[in-house]
Length: 161
Picture 1 (tube, rainbow, N blue to C red):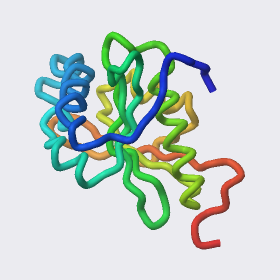
Picture 2 (tube, rainbow, N blue to C red):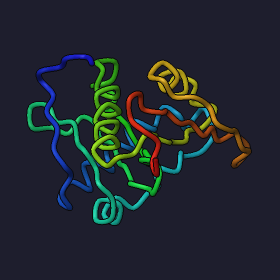
Picture 3 (cartoon, helix red, strand yellow):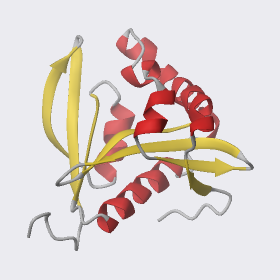
């Protein structure tokens, strides 16, 4: 784990929805010229998402610098979205957020995490692979490719065993 003592974590509250939306829009803006449109997370309704899903926020100096949105499924933890504000990228915050998701999965008795990303987001695919995620399948989507990835957690029995 990368130590970053200036980062603390807390769950999102409804009042955080606007800040989450702003971070998502800033973090994903770099991909607009790559895929020729706004990635779907840039268009999400974060008031609704924060009300319906757990978000863990990375906070530094009382500013939200990253977030991860997860959903607990019967046999895995789904990572709906993870992003870090552009000015805070490259400092291991994304890795810390994904480690938090792993801890949540273990605590809930889930032995696997799953996520998807756009195949054009090569830096993201590379990061997930470095962190132990494998590509499960690829599907065409809006003139591009969606990559579905998963990670089995070591030392955690499969759900249902």
